[in-house]
Length: 164
Image (cartoon, rainbow, N blue to C red; front, side, top):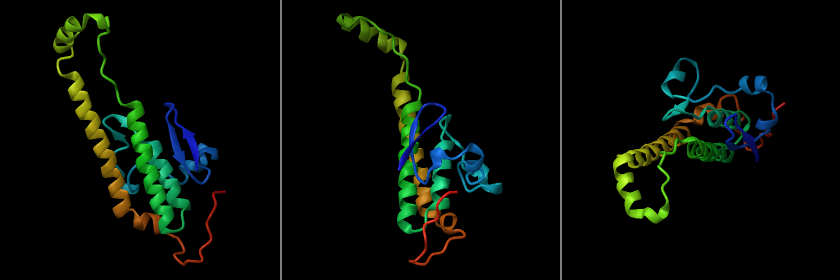
């Protein structure tokens, strides 16, 4: 397992040398979020406005080079972890007014009026984003079998295929 740093500076886990491959090579294998083809529009590459396509591409790469059920489960777990890492790193934080802590009563009074529920709304949207990550994970772990097994030898003697 290794680390791939996205353009936005988020460190994501990856396997099979994903981080070492050229962009052209990667994109010959991956297709962003969703099943690809005419169904690609069903699954957006963004969750609450945050691009999670790098997580999806790493997952596609894992599906391409994995050979058994354990590899599929590992790719799915890495996918969930990477989605959560991306959302946690890039989700917008609410802006708060900085006030001297000694003025706690004034700070509380201003905060109640100026923040006007923005913090609670932000927390709720963050929770919804994490729930969407879980939905993406459940979808691939439940329905991703045909994509994972496409073109693979299912015998117990299959040789692990390495990326070129």
